[in-house]
Amino acid sequence: MSSRLVAGPLALIAIVGSVTGAILETGLPVPATHWVYIVASLPLPALGWLLAVRRPELRYGWLLLAAGLCFGLGTLGTGLSLHGFIGIGSRLSALFAGFYGLSWIFIPLLFPDGRLPSRRWRAVAWISGVAVVVHGAGILLSGFTLHRPTAVLSGPGQVAMLVSAAAQFVTWIMAVIVFAGLLVRWRRSSREERGQYAWMVGGAAATAVGAVLMMAFNLGGLRSPVIGLVGIVAVAGGLPAAIAAAIVRHRLLDLRVGIRGSRLHLVFDLRPTADEVLSDLGTVLEGTSEPVEQVSRLAAAVRTGLELRWAAVTLADGTRVVSGRQEGRAVLELPVRGGLGRIECGPRESGRLTKVDRRLLQALAVPAGLAIQSAGLVTRLVNAQEAERRRIERNIHDGVQQQVVALIAGLELARATGAGPDMLTHLREQARQTLEDLRELAAGIHPSSLTQGGLVEAVEERCSRLPVRTTVTAPPPLRSRRFSDEIEGAMYFTVSEAVANALKHAGATTIEVRLTQEDGRLRATVADDGKGFDPHTTGRRGLATLADRLDALGGGLGVDSEPGRGTQVNAWVPVDG
Image (cartoon, rainbow, N blue to C red; front, side, top):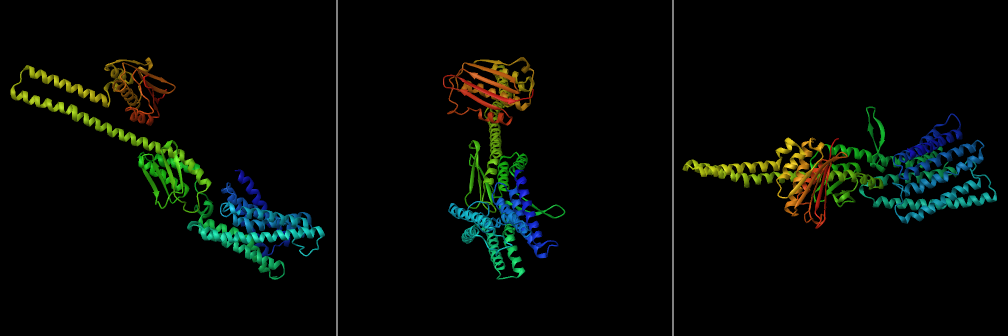
């Protein structure tokens, strides 16, 4: 918003100055030649305003705006001098030195993003800046005006004019050096940038030709008005025309020109902003729950947002998804927080990655981390479900199925041999054991007590069958409270796995289970007096899958343990009320 408040008035002053100065010079009606002059002076401040507003973080737009401002005020100064306002007119006319210095030197030198090509050009920039300032100051102090070029100057005025001429000569030398450097950069540029540099080389050459024509016209060598008009049009409009062509043809500075709407009017547009990319990314990721598809869409969003040839997302487990056709090595890599993976960026479709691109990629790193974490969580849950299905299948095959086969064989034998009471009693006990095993297996999948009585009753029923002293505590309101099947199942199996670990691994003699609900969270704590362990060097002993299950519900799981001091498992999930 602040860039608009500054750039708008500056561009308006430049345009008003050019128009007013041209009208003051000729009076009304304005001849056709001066209308051409006015039109030729408009693109520079207009283009400077566009770049300053759209890309305020880059100096190049402000550079064009400054050149346009110097040209407009210089034109106004010439017009005022012709009407007797010599003082203010000569001061404003001195700004033409700034226009020529910016147009001949700094606009080509700082092309295309407002930065020096390298540190070696610092000396050229400093010398040129000093020469331009001295040139303008010399004109100002000498009292020289364009409408009186042959006026006799005083002694100090002559000295100032000589110093100004020397500074102008240095400006010409620096302009030649900058133009030569621009040719070298054009020859050495990449295929994507060569078109942009070609237009700038053409614009700088047109400006140089226009300057020669203007000098010939002003010095009397060529008095044709057409020559002077062509010269001023080339000087004022050559560079902005070249930059505009680079925008249209080669998307300079990420600006695009296209047709929008039913009325087919031209619009200037930028690539999506960080907020737009983040919003689009959220919408895209919500459209699928498949882990690989989520990572693929994330890579595509990075590629589209930064306008890259290709982009890749690599997960910590080595899974790598590429959007686009990868050619060559990545020009930029960004690790995702938490060591979950990294984002790799190929070269841009045109131009180089800028600081703005890097900030956009850093903004994408946060939702990218969440997307990668979500994809990993979904993958782990799917793998856990598959492992659980195989466990149940194995238990049925190795346990209950064999018992049923044996029971059927016994029944067939009893029928064939006319079994007595002892054999029938044995078969009955075998059938009861099979039924008990089936109940235990069903309880491992989803206990009936959890469905019928709720979480507290199911935990108490589970702990009542443990071979060590186990206490379950829960506030009375929680006993009658029911939650969703997902929440009750996740908390029940977390408690079940924790007490199983206490028996199998910790050698505990006492287990305490506490169930509470407070601050919008349902909590379960399982503490034992076993031998304990170091959580940093030992896995979670079967709790990792349950931790993912709790995480998917918005909850969490923590393990607090030390060797010789027992273990405490803390699980929680958010609940309403």
